[in-house]
Length: 388
Length: 197
Image (tube, rainbow over all chains, first blue to last red; front, side, top):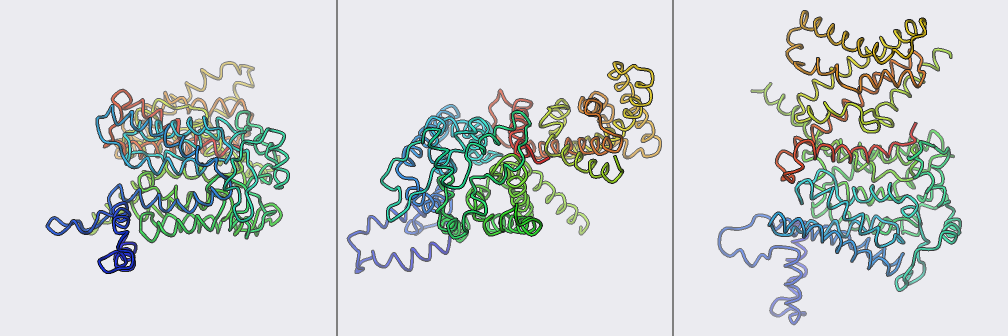
């Protein structure tokens, strides 16, 4: 936070002060400052806040961190993102308000983040009613049943996405080509292609969308199709790492451009909203794992760099696994949590019937997070007892 | 089958029993102790260790009993009764041995040791081993893997439930209700392992 505060105080504020160039726009500056911090001007008298961070600012920071990906999603997939975000906020918000009314407490800001993250992890042409069903399931089962914001064991957005991926495997694995050129798809409303067209589009991209969908359905029947792992929407070795870095590969809305994700993610790391231990251990373990796989059989497993940039790994690592509520509290626990998620994501991606494993890996990480904390606590207690 | 291949198959079966076909989260066996004893981490560790020991041992004994006694007399349909009797007798026997030689461990395990007799995961593992026609070596891996998978699941559940003690879970869902919902979400995550083995 201090880093950001310094920029605000030293670089931007003087311009708006008496005698500054932009004096006229001072109210605008104050509004933005208010959005980002509890304004410093208030603390003339005691009590003084030591840190400007409370739940509202915390969520604000995450939303700012998500903005680059959101803009990238607009560029690559067009105006359809807008109704998806609106539906996500409306449907999830309805559940949130309902529970707030029943519990007779104020509505928590936490949902602002879930409501924005959720559409960003969905395929671009997912029917709007599925968006609504998914976000309602995620908020209702994943969060409100556990007592609401700050008490959820699982990340609501992940719960919603896993639910959708298993309930509607075909719709959740239909991808469209990204927009190109100066404006991309920015001013287009890309609709869901009819089934035949979808396959054609997928072929153009060097993928086999239907096969992927079949693979996701395989969990019903325990049929495991060999080699499905190579036909993934991740693009595999066919797509160059450069394309993946700038986002010229189809995928879920927010996960296309690695550059934008890293930009937003690093912002969150610098403001200390997300913890670097989680991010570093996820990406590190995923890199080591995919490097080893690639060395053992370069034909089957993609290079480590591609593996890091592909799919939802970066997005999951920077924005979803770092959720402070559903992850471990202790620092040592965070390392274990990250290593588990990173290696599981690569394992599931390469060996299971599913083309992408990040969401399962994070959900599994959420499951073991409390017990990891418990182990760290018990080790510390033992050490304390031995010393005393 | 040569022994090295058997050993490899044993490892694979063990891994898949822990993750891909976790006896608790994909077959939903052993739910009763899972919901009732998962309130604290400490007790669930005790129960988990007891389950690992008993399940590994009884699947081995049951394998021998099935293939050398029941098949010999052509009485395969008796396996339910025989397996239950063997499990109950084994648990009793273990209880007496532990009580005699290590009273402290006996105190620690307390009520959980006799409770294992009625844990359907134990009987389920023995029956699966028959249905799937495992060899003896593979059975060892399967029994051990299943019990380790069960223990991991109950440990994770105990950790989650300990964290939930401060939460305001809706009144109607407290206790078993929220436990089953958590188990469902855990099972959702374990679907991700489908097809690994």
